[in-house]
Image (cartoon, rainbow, N blue to C red; front, side):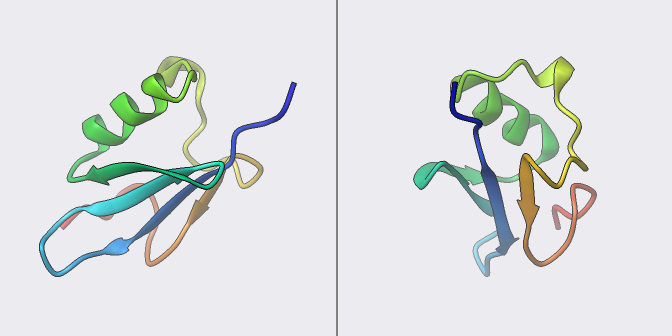
Length: 68
């Protein structure tokens, strides 16, 4: 089974961070809670995800603690 790759982009001028999974844009997350919902929609269990896992996430412009 192919592994999901999540890219979380830097904050935008309008707020939030664009989120992409395996090349598909999932949307713009404005909080960690919204990001976790995107992960659930992508087929991941948010409770089992390590947000600092470099094999799963590529954080651009700051890590999982930067939302504003």
